[in-house]
Image 1 (cartoon, one colour):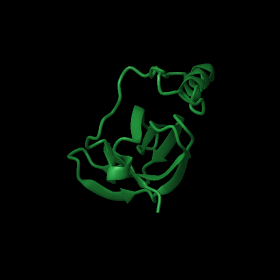
Image 2 (cartoon, rainbow, N blue to C red):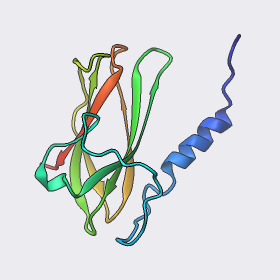
Image 3 (cartoon, one colour):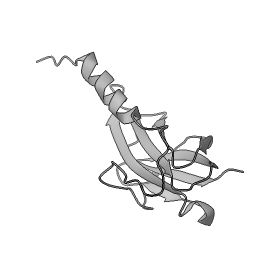
Amino acid sequence: MKHHRNPVIFLALAAALLAGCSNPQGPGSLDTTKYTIESTDIFERLDQSVQDSIKCTGLQERVLPDGRLEVVANVKNQEDRRIEVEINCVFKDEKGVSTGDETPFRHLILNEYATQTVQFTSANNQARKYTIRVRQAR
């Protein structure tokens, strides 16, 4: 049985994912995301300076038709000032061992209380797990 995917559904999901990504929220506002991914093996804050400043408010992952893993993360600035960080993704196999597929760190500028969506795609079809790493911009 062949499955057909409706492009309208994908557009609606993309719009929902991007909604509010650049809207600053003040210190008294509530996150609309139900869960926050704390510093774990999935989202790792590498520097003390980003421990309280950055959080991940959502992750989505999917396996592409060619077997590569695609990861989309919402990264939020918790500060009332603009901050600059660098972010990358280390892809891992089923057992959590690095596949040797690591994206270069990319520069990310987050305005006050802003959230940005960042996408990573593995270079090969061995990736099943990953770690997103954030550090202070150098």
